Length: 511
Ligand code: BES
Ligand code: MN
Ligand code: ZN
Image (cartoon, rainbow, N blue to C red; front, side, top):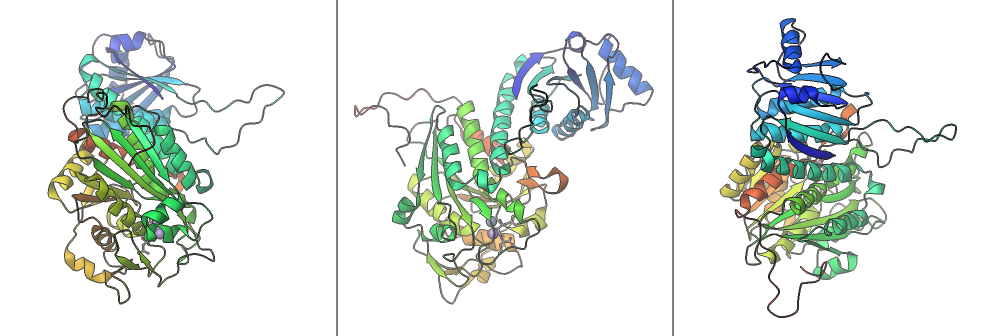
């Protein structure tokens, strides 16, 4: 999506030629003497249009309005959540129209949060997944007609200058969200661990971003026995992806993001039931969100250091697969009794969490579609948050609220760890049905004792089921807001030439 921010008063919006114009109208809207104000007032008077959030009225060829289509959308009190809902409804009203571009304007001054919400909602509503859709066959020698898509959006506010920075942030998050949605949506045969590694490589073409992709040999050499054990039942080779964004001085401790990258989760020998198993292609949504964050970081260039770790593999049941009862040795040295091969996310994450220690991080945040129990607890509204550190937890909670990508803190009392006791290893990988999201977090916590740690269980928020089935791109917004909060005031100065005389470190060769 191509975005542009413009100063637009209603009179100018009325005069501007555009295929589609969305006008966001709040309860406190005050009419001027332009054509759009007249339209709004007339529609309000006849009760065809209300300013309640989400109410829309579409018209075509409105008098003295240059836009072909006009959609009035109510935003109530103008708060971000209402704006988001209204923009979704308004873009929905344009569905099926041939418009390829739109202008969205606020009929009254917009807050930063409202502008961000509007921009993100336009991007969200206009995203169309096409990667594995068939190409339309040409008819009578003429090029086939693809369904029209909105690929350009102008966002108009009364005073654009004051809102340049929030707009830049929103566009970067929108691009990160798109990256995450795209990878999460791709089916497992189009988003293998190898392909995720290539996606990370592609991202490392951005300035300040570098990456290293480890394969089975390197992972074996490191001693990631738990991660390897999950991958051993699949023909697809595992990948361990290490992304770096260096926006601040080397001496600044990085924030490490760890994304669960199970590109397909059959459950392994503890096989999942067939209905909805296809949705387990989304089991790399945590990894996808890390890719999305790096996309946004490359664009925003904040003064912060970030490391992204992605253990990526399939969880499959073949003759070599991990079996219930097997004991594996993790990178930390702790042994794990695998009572259920379907609790594989924690088995790949634990080795990545141990690997994270080498960065001496200021915080480590793992992001994972970890438990069905979290879906039951919080549904699709808030992600589950667990944290060993209150400052980190508060930062993430606040970032989520700001971004409209909220989470909710759940407990980590040591009593919950009782369920993970094993007679044959240091720890078992499952603890039964009660508090399943918490016992999963307690398992991870054993491997995250060396730094401030948080865990986001996004099993309920990373994708939607049913007719709107698809990835949401969450929690890219939450994470980007959090990381910007960790950044110094200014963008990092360009790196001084290395004193050793060795020059710039080669891309793709570090970690
Ligand atoms: N990827 C699933 C979690 C999941 C389930 C996400 C449903 C979204 C919807 C994870 O690997 C898993 O299978 N977890 C098990 C753990 C259990 C065996 C302790 C679960 O939640 O059922
Ligand atoms: Mn599983
Ligand atoms: Zn899984």
